[in-house]
Length: 141
Image (cartoon, rainbow, N blue to C red):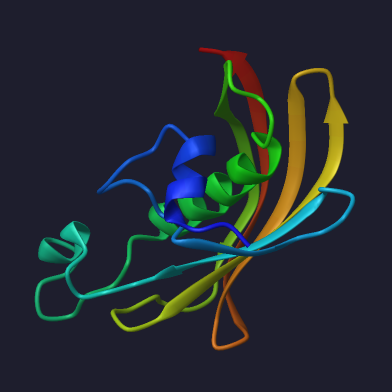
């Protein structure tokens, strides 16, 4: 398990854009991660998306999946930054609202040079709310 401070050692993101609160598990092979974000009504994006009917923007749900992948691949890499390279097969199945515990499950499918391809699902209460295939490039800082 990793707490927020340990996550911040691996990722360049900071409040209000850090979207991973805790890592629950990284498998022994370091190819799969399970992490989560506690979604609260105090999130800045709820001020405008949508007033009176707060829904977490789907793009931020996918960003959270990408950040979880970043935590996984950035374990010992201190001089690199993970950049989005592509997002494919992205689907949204249900809204994420205040009070939800948004769980990210991301698995690396392939690593080729500095490119990492992964598949991720985001869940609330065990139900998939979003999924995507994500590719990131590990670039020097």
